[in-house]
Amino acid sequence: SIMLGNIIAQAEMNYSYEMKYGEGKQVTLAASGNPDTSDYNYFENLLDINTYFGENIYMYSQLEYSNLPIYGTRVNGLNTFYLEYQNDQFKIILGDQYELYGRGLSFYTFQDQNIDYNNSLKGITLNYFLKQNIEISSLIGKGSYYYRSNPSFRETDLQLETSVIFNSVNYENDKFGYFQYAYNKQQLIIDPALTGIFEDKTEIFNELDDRREYALFHPATDQQLVYIYSNYEKESILDTVDIKNHNFNWNLFLG
Image (cartoon, rainbow, N blue to C red; front, side, top):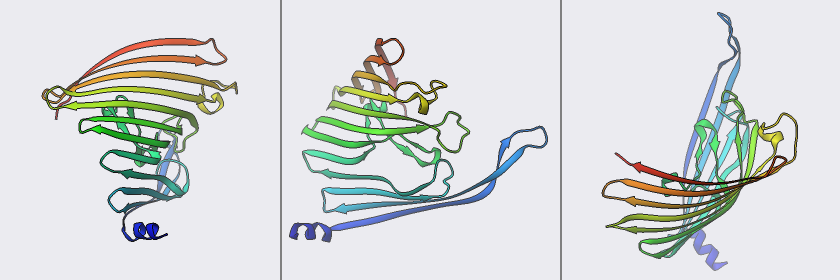
């Protein structure tokens, strides 16, 4: 109880509140000279809370009350949460995972409220700093991804369930640049009734993606070479498909 009291006493919090309100009309059926319209109202409230417990513990939470939001479904409650602990040797994150690896080519999860996009996972991330220039990372998580069969829809009508195991080793050298080895295993649980793949309900099937990636980045020339090996295995009501794919990607970053 004494330790808990000391942590609470060292807590620092800051808040960010955003409200959006509007009333208007939207075109539901375009007709020559006389389009059909309907009401388009929104009332969106977002409260971001950043909490620091001493020098090592950070907690982020986002509360949302949107009835309706500009784009998306009604929300009332805790929208995002994660807890982070970091010291000189390692960092651990529990909760919603928003991570970027390999400049976004290996792995990238983020949230954009403006377009109602969120591909985050719920799980755990562990970063271990072996030396000053060597970092070992692991991420395990599950999540649901909601999307639209028609981009003009205000609310989502389709969804995917996914689980991910991601591991990477990063090495950085001032002379030779940035090196990365990444291993990503992803499982998509697809219900055709929710994805619109088939007209009628059918059996659930899995898609497995076993991916290994190697990346080289040279800081002096801002060039990056990425080699990706992917092994796709599909098990479904269809014939089993096994695809092995090799991909090379070269990028020149400017600016």
